[in-house]
Image (cartoon, rainbow, N blue to C red):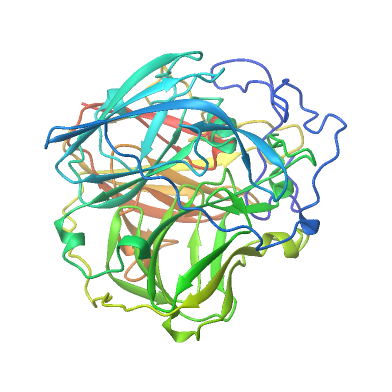
Length: 492
């Protein structure tokens, strides 16, 4: 049952039921023993008692190719278990890429292929999806295109035939994606091009990727995973550390933010409510900078933000906080994200131009479609649907002509639970929100994920070209997708 208390922000996925198809696998507790009793009598960590801002925020490792031919960069990754210190003083078992948490970064260029061989040494199957990428079907990481557990391999080819974008990769194995991502299977993929390089934006050590998320722990350090426990996931992390600090110079920094949470939305702001300049979103740079005091990102979305620390004297400590939480969550835990410490001066030749890029004009659309997202909110309900149906891998829900430009109107018909909507293969443009044209702000850029609060409707436009095949669209609150809020589209 979804109550007004538990669904104020992200809705609640059902506790699990055994089965296949559109049904769920058993909920797995922190020890991986397949029971809905997630804590199994063990003591749970109290987030309020954890010391904040005592750990330095790490930078994710940048992977280097083992071979570069000039047109193609080749990488190897191994999905493996690892143990890391997330909460100060205790160790946490995780599922990772290459034993890294935060996950690694791949830096790619438009027009140059990336080929990655993934070896799955975990005890569960996986499927690696490069979120936001324009790729052929066999490298998309479809929910049922699995890498077998215990040493299975798959090679993914990313042509990078799209403009610059802030992408990320994560597990997408149906029924398992929610838990695998929660336990650490995420990484960053930064795609650049000449358009972005020509701008004098902050770069090098002043260009910092940050993966944000939440979690829930036992006192022993093990993660507690349970469908429907969103309001208990109240330890916030930045780059794999709980409430870390980051030392900065008194100059401009570019932060590439990714919300890797299963269900948590973030409304990010500086403690003094000073200016944040959002320069990009999912599909790369915005047409023009968006100056604001709050940056909002739902699960799966990215925000490219510049913060100018030159306005602070050396010695200043300033927090990046979160406004998006209901009043019954512990504010001391979920309102704080990251602390910046201004420790030095530094030269700054970077600029934020008034114009960042020119997006291609919107052409005429040949097809209009409507999609309804809904999950059960009544007592005993366990389903999550798109147009009244749960996901079936063998059913094609939407037939699309190759090259067609379509307008999709997507509605969240729930009264309590928010959702968001993610399309594979394509970046789209947001035309309207709740019947009003989108003419300014972050939604004027290229998007692949868009949030919908209860009762909201968005209208998006996409062109389906480049590759033929079957791809999915779904709610990117992972628990909702695992419950069946997903569908197939076939481009032919």
